[in-house]
Image (cartoon, rainbow, N blue to C red; front, top):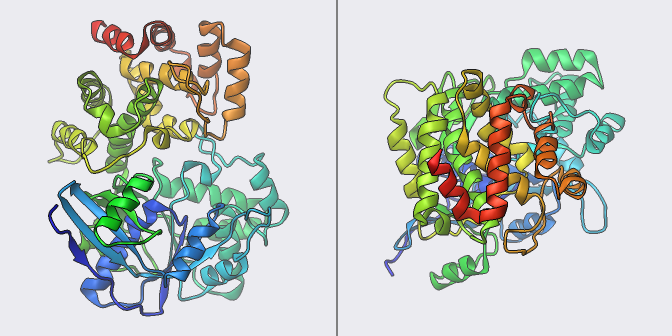
Length: 490
């Protein structure tokens, strides 16, 4: 094995200019790496990070604290080309979620104080699509969600990311402190605009003047993030241990990384350009390209592959028929819906994605990608399929993907093996399968009628509905190979 390149972290500065909501693997392997690289190059210590977990992983928060807020990122170009990067830019970790005893917000007061501090100039987020509590189809705040109802009733004890943002901004407004910039780094179209929508609409339930101030004064730039970061496995920790790294907080990822950010930071920002961040006036083309081509392909592979017992992206993309399906989807259904700046070659982009998926050093589990499909598929598949439907163009790959997703939500693969369905709508899915499981036509119709997932105009497209039903019947009767063969004949 070739010795990895090792990069040690800079000494800590003790200064915090950024608060991050969502202390997960992606944040540690993406934004924190950019912040560390910037600090390494510039020596500027003003942009240390306070990272907070809003869910149940208190162990990660405390584990990082015990390690002096240092951890390792292993960047794999392939199994023989590794960069081991020590990250030290995180200065503080806090927990605002629910612990194992059912208690909420252990460090919520400290987190709100940190966000309300004039030293905090940027708040970044990676809380996943469902963490914004927006209807995936309409983009409106889900004011009937129990968590949002709780934040409306007790705004000073927020449990959600939008609630924390509203309360922190209210504290700054009352103190006469200029607002921080809110930078979403989640895979949503117009993620800055959607974050603004969630925050302003939640604030309207509390104070109309506060909502107007947020809408007028707070910057919500959009961004596009890209790096494949699989969930850690025992095998990953063993590989790192063989390299001399014993670190329960470590993450592994691919060497490739990209960050495209709308340049709208009234309170200032680091000089990210020197670290390869693309600061642009309009993120939308890059964001849509990534959502529909990379994320859409991932979801297509996830549902079809999981039904066939395939465990990882690497295994799936190395099956010729699945690789051909992904390339066909990207070039024939996704790429034609995109309007990109001059110089962007979408065929090359598609081929580069397939090469990244085939990285033999990553074991990106399909079940991880399959989580929260109801929140992801509207922007990954359905918005593009709707655009094609409006011009009388079909989307057979998306129709097959929808059929696979519907079948996947039954909680059992084609061989009869059971698995948990991790989705905010899992209870509804179970009820639909119980009601219509023996009637594919009724089941598909019920799924397409979910207007909080499927755009109404697309569900009304009889050709698309029939394509989904036909694919579902073929998939359940003839398996994955049969469904792929049938698709090739259309």
